[in-house]
Image (cartoon, rainbow, N blue to C red; front, side, top):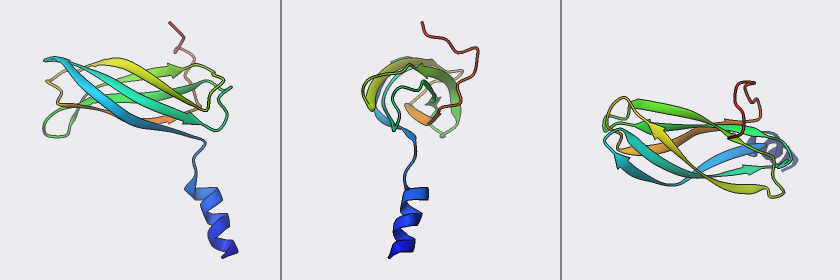
Length: 106
């Protein structure tokens, strides 16, 4: 039992996660993606990669989104992703704390 608990604590939880809330097709090359970011340390800035995907599942566009520090562990974010082909869905590829230096707040 102890091994299972330790395994869950080390492997079962992530310090940050991004979860798709919904998406809206804006036009033939644009999708609006809404997602929730949950962090164990909301005082740290983060980055999430959000994608537009085509009917065949291929990625047609992506965007890195800066998630600024917050007082809340969970925040909801909405962003626009432009695609090179018509998107049919938007999704969250992943989130992390390794924020590139070129990514700045608007």
